[in-house]
Image (cartoon, rainbow, N blue to C red; front, side):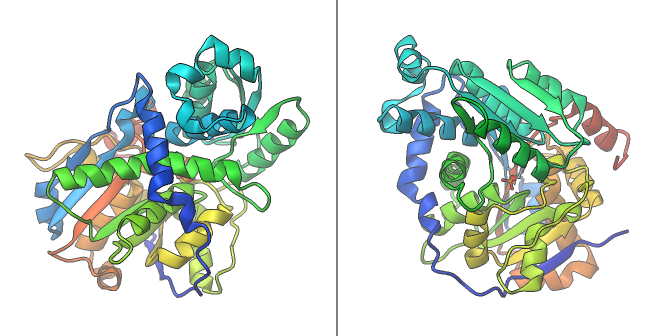
Length: 401
Ligand SMILES: Cc1ncc(COP(=O)(O)O)c(C=O)c1O
């Protein structure tokens, strides 16, 4: 069985110029925006007391994003907020003046007119963009990488977007979406990753993800937990991880939690960068084959990379078995604990945590991040069973696919 790989972060620190992207005031704006949606409800924070005892931890919390807006994943938070901020900037308004009721009004549609939003996606981000475009009366064009399942495409189609599965990997789909947008009148790229010269929209997307982190911080307090000691977060391009790490660093500036980033082994670009240790970005190419479709991205978000370099303790690369194990454990909780339906990309950090706490070969990692009976750990199950057939195959049939 392939091992979980890990690298302690010894990279040189930078000026931290992007930490302010995730300032508490910016995230508050995003949350206020999301709260204006009729579909809005805080997603549950599952408190797994029996599992915490079993794993030798003090407290264990899993934020369950399968309940987000009926879309089964957190991603819509980013695309919707970025689209609102884009429309705000085009119409000379502040996003605070554009709650859902105004954004979807006839008056605003007439004022803003018609744009086409282009994006590339493994499924969840594109579904969020298509959903938001539909609600706002805008057009969406979505490209998906080879290996994506038909179910994920159908979910995007249902939202009225133009969508196809290409023969390219995720990163090449991003380039295709950017090229098409540049050739289209009022074409806009709403991509969940940043590169040099394309930073504003991805920073809005990260702020949108901040809603999830802010909710979790409030819910922890409701449970009597003033501060998690450890936060595990999964990464594809790293926008989500940058958002979560940035938010919690700003929330606890004097005493931040220990952050662990978990990637799919087949697409572990951040881990590779950390292992190289010089602070420069590393890229993973090829077909990036993994069951963790949402994490199958080989080129890091440049803004996030800067935040992660400065604040993350350990970068881990998880083989598929770790994600599958996490899915099974969360779906069959210890008696008394709530169940979390967690998909492949959602369960990877939990699978890694459970392995690190129970398998001798990861004692070094356990010690490197200081996980023990006093630890209060927060994780994000970022998706539910976004591909229900595959979910059943893994959880019921015991296949790692
Ligand atoms: C369910 C899920 N979790 C995590 C991620 C990772 O987010 P990011 O690409 O910002 O690192 C994704 C990305 O698509 C996803 O769909």
